[in-house]
Image 1 (cartoon, rainbow, N blue to C red):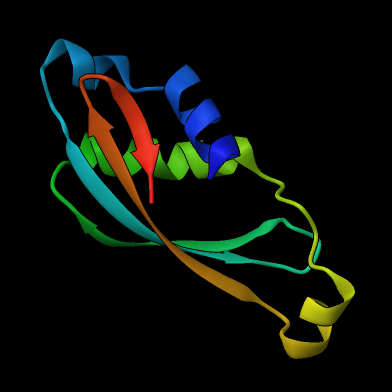
Image 2 (cartoon, rainbow, N blue to C red; image 1 turned 120 degrees about the horizontal axis):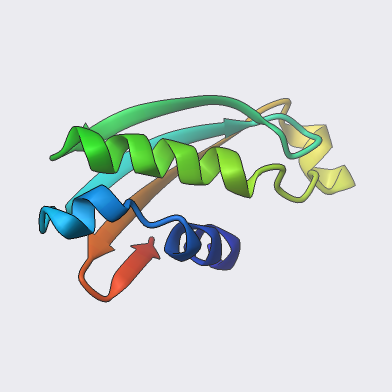
Length: 94
């Protein structure tokens, strides 16, 4: 979460700020055991510019930490659902 927010605030979509476009995009991110991104699916979004920014932020922040040994025993792919909240004060993710 911290890495996504750091990368997201450094790469906040300037066009969205200029046009006062704020809102949320919800993504499903699938990760391989080595922490690389397998797939990104948009679950909901109010604005295409924010949707594209959220996808770009995930790609810029990758790779993520690799799975632990115990995680590798339980799963081949990890799916995480995150909401990206683009606001005047910056990006937050939950």
